[in-house]
Length: 463
Image (cartoon, rainbow, N blue to C red):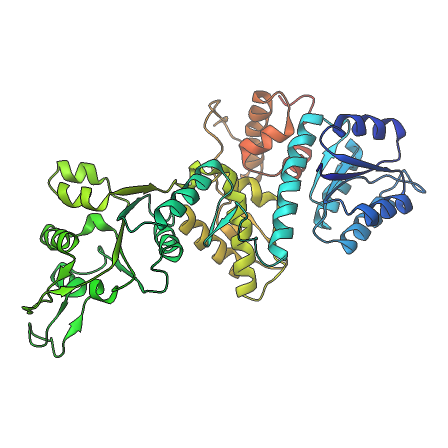
């Protein structure tokens, strides 16, 4: 089914041109004034509306367009309203953004730019509606056992988890820090026949070497100073369930030998004990280390690697999941906003390009930490780039032309000169295309328009 789109424009020729340009991919409704616009909107409930500000009975002013904007958002606050404005109305279009409009385009409309904006608007509108409904359906491909992902790579990860969960084979999960290795391990456990048993996790890199044996295998009373009582270890505690060994590459070589013996014999001896204790547990291990290099360097046993790596599951870093970045960001914002009593908090439009462009070296964990902080720090109903500490995001590689170092005047003038030269360089590189230039600069299109107006840069003559 085609997505519904309402175009509110009093110029019949422009209305017709936009309709035929978009009809292939959208179910298009047309209106030239407030009454017919609201009637079509209420009957069809489109997620996205294109709105001209200068409408009758006062086409030379913006009062009617602003009134329609308010009426549409009052009917459905999740509607993405994209303002279509003439060059002289740019300041008013920016005001409309402040009142809740999603984005704006200047006339004449560049259809390639419009299609990019529409695609993103529909995506965000759908995401917000799914979140408002409370949860994604269990069979929705974007959600799986607490993990989110809509791209091909993550769908492959979900399918691998489904397959491996039905077996009892050991699994080795590989991935950078923050990619969700423990979440994947819990998903395997929850989907397995052992789901009613315990899930016992241990971080092999967080326990001092002199305590790791007792922590894993337990100890008998009096086996060493301070052992005042018999204490089962983590392996024994995982009886009938799943043992998750995180940061496996940090496990000392002597403990690797003992772990291998357990995997082969399925029994342990506590520290200071003489009795073999059988343990039935599934072992899932994870690491962000290069275990093959560690084997070459003599830091990790080859026989243990192949015992654990019966099935290898690789989790992609966030920078390789471009289609999932906004999905995760929106879901995390909703979660933390509700947790801190700020339900309804949204991203400022300037945030979205920054979020997409940030390399996320700490992956999902970094995103969680940044968005949690942003929710706490945000004032009003919008999260801004400074709240996320993304205000200094670098421009894309390829901006090779140097900005002039010969700066005169005071600090304000120097800053404006740098901004002017950088924006002109990027606009030249993209042939004056605002959407592409804004994406490279890491700012929203409205922000770029605002900067161009402030710095006296014309779209037709970027240089």
